[in-house]
Length: 492
Image 1 (tube, rainbow, N blue to C red):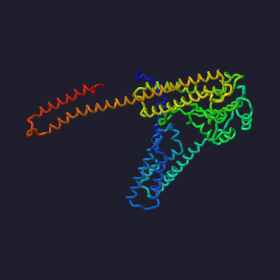
Image 2 (cartoon, helix red, strand yellow):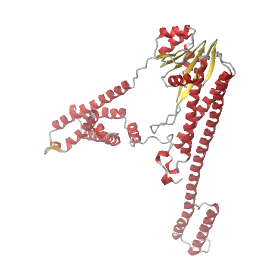
Image 3 (cartoon, rainbow, N blue to C red):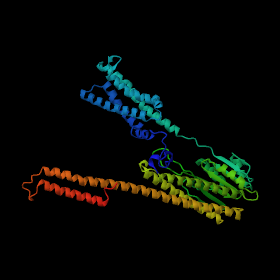
Image 4 (tube, rainbow, N blue to C red):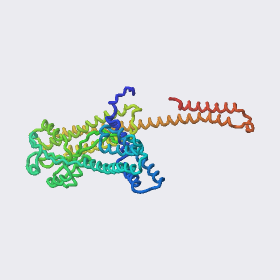
């Protein structure tokens, strides 16, 4: 592939972040160095420098020291203002922001003291007038300090999110009629009747888990642990209740330069007991409607709704993993074909993080395979689990084996890419070291000649002339070059 014709759209998203805001990385570095807390500290240091000379008499040496400190602090404010203005996403919005106008006032006011204003030389005015001009600066600096605190409080208040209310949906035995939102009383009635129903509970928060726990007679800690994102797929048995823990995953690409590719997992719990099947999750997803749509095509009135819904849930999860596996394979092909000069500095960090996510995905598939194996071995009490359903679940089991093998192959390919990058880097480093060794050895020659020109050879123990010494030096030089040629160090 010709590097010059390499299409920028073919770059892997896992190691190349979005370029919609080209100054984002610069802005993040500036905010990290000239943070609000640091500038507030500088502003607080400026206040005594401004105010003390207004109320106390100091010697000229101390006043001169105050002036130097004042200039240095003003230099910090100037650097902060113009660097953040340059790196802003929208410079006009940044400029007209009231707090940034205040910053501009802080850096403009000192110059009024030393430059002519409307033809009047302020620098030659009375000391009282000069001191009065410092008062607005003190107020501006104080406002900057308070403004930073207010902005910090505004940001904290924006981060406070309102938890969504818990929702309960139910699909009745015919797999065609369902209620979008039912109350807890109706939920209790469904649990006690003898009909086949599928109940989906989403947006479960910590305060709702206790309610669900009391209704299902299951420990709160048990439900909390099953809904955790770090829990692998598995089955638990509590008397006549079977609890299946599953996860749905997505491939989340980095949007910032300091972020990495991740595969976040959304855990949900399936509870099978009697004629009912419950699904519990902390977030609202499209799982309910997709399974409802597909189960209508597969459901037979003579068969059990629990098995049909359970099969469709596993089918949904496996399709999810299949899409991720295909996307990862495409991403690896892009990473493998990235030109050497376009490899980012944190290439190894990003690829190692990618490998870590692949390992987690492989572990999920292995545990999911064990769950399906338990179902095929009839270790889950499912009424109506006949030969037809066993064959369908066996197809899912084979699919999981294939996906797990694919993930392991992708992991091996990524390790090969990482090893290739390390070998290339080592080769380039060795090449540089060889060049330095050649330059060093050949550089001895002019150094020796220069040294010999300053030597007195009249009383030397050997009867040699300068030209004879030079011949010996050049012979040694050519011998070193010959060695380098034989070692291949002078090849490109």
